[in-house]
Length: 153
Image (cartoon, rainbow, N blue to C red; front, top):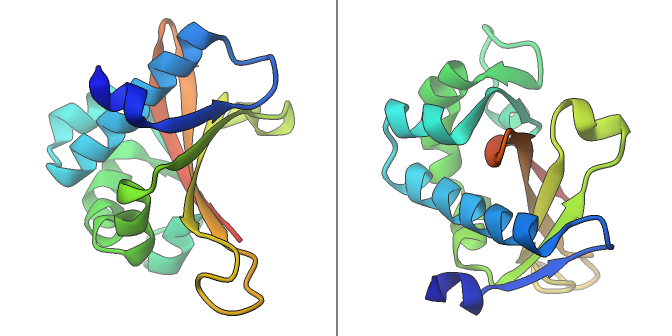
């Protein structure tokens, strides 16, 4: 529980309850744990059936033509590549994280988005606006399931 208190999480707006915020924090930490030591059973337990993955565009193969990917395909084809990426490594140690409730438009894929700062303004290069990794979660019953990844410039 101490790791949760050490996170600099900020829930944006009044639409994220403190109970949901705590559950999202724990779900985010679980995503990092499962990605670090991947196995299909744990991944299925923490993820929604489909994963919205804009990042996967970078790793596409001829079998994929959508940003909505079956979780088993995501696990088999993309998880290792994401794990070894610079943006994932930076996100796993970043202390700057924000929780946003998704807009109505995006709620078909996710209910909440955790934004993790991976590059601060001017850190990557002079004049660069910075970047964030977005980890999406879908609320299924009382649980928050991993539902996607994206980077935001």
